Length: 618
Ligand SMILES: [Zn+2]
Image 1 (spheres, rainbow, N blue to C red):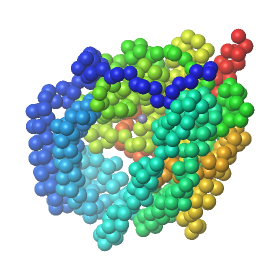
Image 2 (image 1 turned 180 degrees about the vertical axis):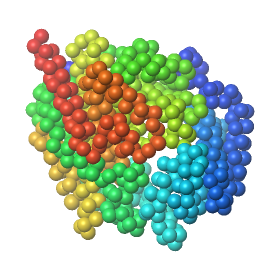
Image 3 (image 1 turned 90 degrees about the vertical axis):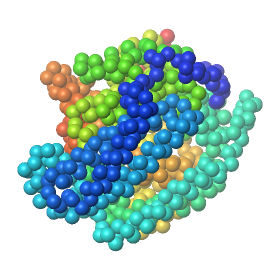
Image 4 (image 1 turned 135 degrees about the horizontal axis):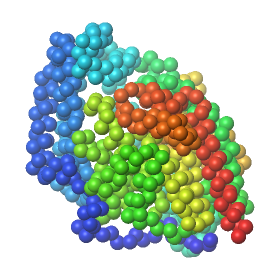
């Protein structure tokens, strides 16, 4: 157990892209045969954009004019996907490619032009009374396709100000990113990273990546503790500056909420997707009542790691190490097998997705890092990976495959206007795909050690994507309520909120170190996108409840659950996300979905305890 892994092991030399077999590269000729074809499509897009601009001032003339505007906007949208992704994906193959970078920017300039020449559309439509447009739709079935999009535009109108008010807000928006920009400069550009001497004598520069690596790989607790203390000192040293920047975020949000006539900042944040505030309040309350399995997991970790005291910096080190490799070719068989509970059609489509030149598998010099699924409308989704045969890499593929299947079904079953799904639903299929894959891998696992690694992977996923994000959402809500109630916002007050939350979630299962107080100062999402992270948690809860319905039932109940789930994937953005989820059997305003996550964690921790005990008893 005392094997020390250096925090940043030297990477193996990368293979040149030319030496990688075509079977492991995506085939972009599915979008355009060559760059000449791309250029022709680009010019066509430009022409269509000018044609759209010419429609200004015509909408009030009747249903036909409105339908014409929607149709040309659809045509522009469809072509945009292909024109953008052909160059964007090619650029990601090797980001040193200047020519491709220039083409990407050329497309971005064209998109900016479209945004500019189409700005008249919403105000002009909203000038026509809704009952008139509804009458048009009743008589014109082709226009009626756009009913949800049209009516939602009128719903959003509720909080749009008059021209003078909107002008004033648009002027104010120019400094609304200042707190985040200053946070980024303070925490990244201007930061002086400390150096740290590890117990084996090596000296490291403590960047965020290095800090994370030490916590996740270094088996000496005193090294992890030292990294934790040094890293948090960076934030302690400027804690009052961080507090005043965060106060800037809170005041800005409250200013916008009040000027648009929302009751609270949370109301303002949720209105776009028509999410009731009860969803966030219920998420927080039900999670707080379900922290016991989380604490049990940390107590188990403390015992297995053999630590006298257990701290925040001990929460990511693996319980056991295995040498197991997961070659890509094997995963191609496992993944379709894992989705058997979703039926043979889904399995067949996934097989096609994995074997048809849709995936760029291996790393090569200059390739974009990480992984994503790109929805190329009119072609098919593409997936970028940097597969390195690790367990994380195979779960990444399972995750991205979930996104791609969602895209595939949604594009196939919806008219273009609703083919895209919202963030609020996006992470449901990806996390469900991972959960099915975990079940399959646990069944196939050859040893207790491998099962322990799999279980820890799944549990850490729930801790990171669910519990931590709910705690963050809770923090954001409490902080915003300070300004809504006219209370002062100080570093002391923000730290107090954070400490209380940390204790509420973890009880005495994790020692509380003084430095943890300032953790709030470090979290980029708090400054960049307030009220965003709760969506990871609601997606996770939805997926946990769906998983329970899919795998728990049998006979007709199971068939109905599969059908409801596939219907969700086929629905795209054809209605508000809460409505779509309710049809799939998930009501996020009720405690059940969150309880399904708590149960899932409880079951996984019990399984982990069992594997560990039987390993010890041998
Ligand atoms: Zn995702």
